[in-house]
Length: 299
Figure 1 (cartoon, one colour):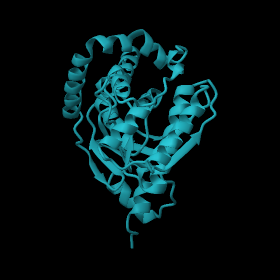
Figure 2: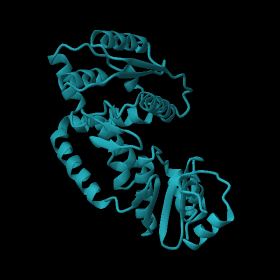
Figure 3: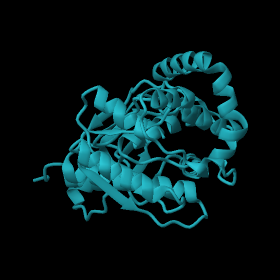
C-alpha cells in the first residue's frame, strides 16, 4: 500500500527515480505486487530491480532488513544513484518509538526516521514520513490508485506487528496532529544535542572524549555515516573495551587519553618509521592501518 503511494507521490513531484522491490516469498500476494511493479515500470518508463530473499523465520525482521539494504546499496554503488527514497510513514515512526522506549533507550535511539538522513555514499529521504497510514490510504482511494494490503501485518509473532496492532495504530489514529508536532520538536532537540563536533579527514573521524553515554551516541552517528548500524550489544561492548574495538570486522574504533578515533579497519604491514610517527603522535593502533594506506609514504 505505502509503496504505491510513494511511487505516485514521486511522479506528482516530477522526481526522477527507478524501482527496487524485494520479494521475501512470505505472502501469497507478493508475486502480484512484483507483477504490478513491473507494469508500472513499463508504463512510466522506469528501470526495475527485483531481489528474491528466502529467509528463515528466526530473526526474520533483522535478516530481512539486512537483505533489503544490502540490495539497495549494491544498486546505488553500481548505478551511481544519489538518493534512496523509502516509504516510511508516521505509523512506522511511532512503532519504532514505542519499541525502543519499551527496551530502555535514549533520545538518539527512540527518535529515528527523519525526513532526510545522510549515509556514507548516499542520502535517504522519506517523503511520506509526516503522513499517517490512514491519510495515505485516503490518498490512494481518492486518486483511485491500485494498492495492496499486506496481510502479514496482522501476524503479531513479529514484534513490530505486535506494537503496531496493540498500541501504535490506535494512538496515531486519535492523536496524529500532536504526534507530528512532538516529533518535529524532538528532531530539533536531537540536532541541537548531537551537533557534529568531530573532525573528519577522508574517512578518519576524531572527537574529544566526554563521557561514555555521549561518546557512544557520537560513535553511533559516525558509523551511520559510514553505512554501519550498531546493535545494542555492540554499543555495550565498545564501552566495555574503553572504546578500543573493531566492529564487524569493518570499522576501527580506538582512543588515547584525550580523543576517540574512528575509521574503516585496514590490516596493513607498516614500516618502523611510520609506527614511530604514530606512537609519537599518540595515534591509537587500530586506526593506523587506515592512515598508513591513505597517507603519502614516509621517505
